[in-house]
Image 1 (cartoon, protein in one colour):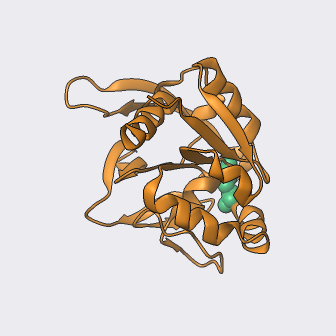
Image 2 (cartoon, protein in one colour):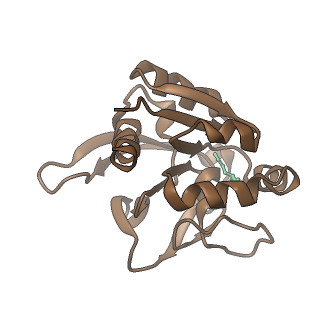
Length: 196
Ligand code: GLN
């Protein structure tokens, strides 16, 4: 079986933390800045940061089109700003998302930087036992609506915060800021399923 390489979009934001946590579980990683970098990858993580800045860079470097193409076959996981970029609609914003997840998001809807918070949430990866996970919300987007094919894997105060649609995954919080690799392991399994 081919050893997967997970790419992390490294244009802006906290990509280094994703690389650290992936390497801590023995995954090969690659910083992705160009379409060429993408070619080696079996999956891609779009990190948190500033979604408007990342969106502009994607369009400027033609990566927007190339990631759309990549995503037809390969898994993409977006966290926070990355989730915004993967959505199908961003409320009151001119940002052009990748439309990989059938969700409508509202940016900064959990409050400003000073309102950042941590909460223990339940991950529902299988029907047996939910797993507790420390979720960090930093100017996080809210998922305001989601389509029928979107599976909700975790909620906070009744709202979806971790969602999966087909081979794509999105979180409104920052799973890379903890020492718990549970969500990265889950994404790794999604990647392995596709290349198996
Ligand atoms: N508020 C940021 C945005 O809209 C996202 C914040 C984050 O990724 N921590 O891009």
